[in-house]
Length: 201
Length: 312
Image (cartoon, rainbow over all chains, first blue to last red):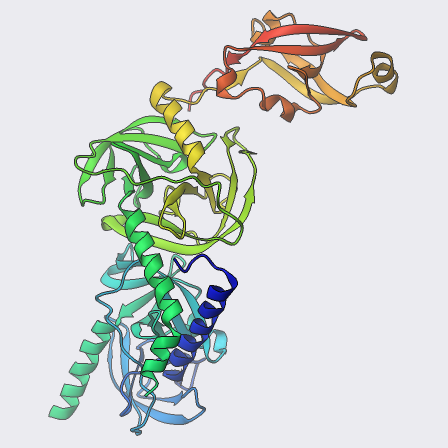
């Protein structure tokens, strides 16, 4: 049991935490829609597809800033109000895409990390555990990943990840002290629909 | 690219993550949801076969209570007893094939130990929050007169359904009953040993009895001259400012104006010192009171009564 935190396991834990946090930060972007403060987004595909919350980008275009400092103009390709998701596209082909995890296989109590720009602070990482999975009273019938960690408005659109740094959700709102994230498999379905439509056009 | 590297370096985090999820899964087999208040259920622990414990303050009705179980069933439950002092309520239900979880002692917990609170909520979903033990103390008398064997303060977030959830250690063992109802919303845990003791008493009697002397007191400083003349060790005592007619103290001959100096040889410096002599195990037992009356020392034997139960 590694929870007997002797000095050695605490150090190993510390190193692992910073490595996973770094991995997650690389594929997290800041999203500016011009008028308001920044939200966050996740580089979902290396060839330019970025996902964020619909409420983060109100217009048809936005600017994104990568962790490495590069900035791009992004086009808002699609949004879905019922799930608060938006797909952004930037003209690039070598983006550090996130590794996507299996949001259908998550377990209550497992470690969850969030990256984003709470209060405009770039590259912040928060850690906690997955509090629960399923609908949330008075928020609707949808399935949420409910995370027991400290989020702030600038985390909107950013990643919720597992202990391997694989993205399992998009942080979307804070309710009753819990961070609510849209499961990554729903994000994947949304993005596939958007890309199919684009190919058909 | 760096995938294998990052997988290696994240191993400690993944191992911790799996341990925590395993702990929740294991403990969750003993955690139930209790429907005894408006809108949202609270949590409870399947403490012994067919007996669940919950946080007393979350039980808002005495009847039509239901329990959602780890096996997916929701069954009726009856309230066997409740104790406001320790914030513990005991419910009985048909456990079917369910076996109660292993309950462990909390005395090994130290400040900084990692712990989980495991709840069961609406729709029979498990919920967890993760944090650390932030304070450990000795026996603690609650503000409502209950006696906890250990003071356990938790540093973790409180969410709906937290009260009545299980305090789970890193090994996945249940070591206490969580509540935010004992100290102004602060996250605390009632140690397993206290839950055992109170549950036993509630199952036997339906309530937790408290000793009763039938006196009202205030602390007084003893005059130096009196202390010297009578060679008294302590500087203060408890002045009787009311004596209930026919109460245990009145029957033992105590009178208004007496100053209580000691009970069973233990000094009474303050009214709080009396509480230690009034646990439920003292009811019906005799206490020898040392009293200062009219400038002289005297003694009386008081048979401890049971505090009358007030209507809720």
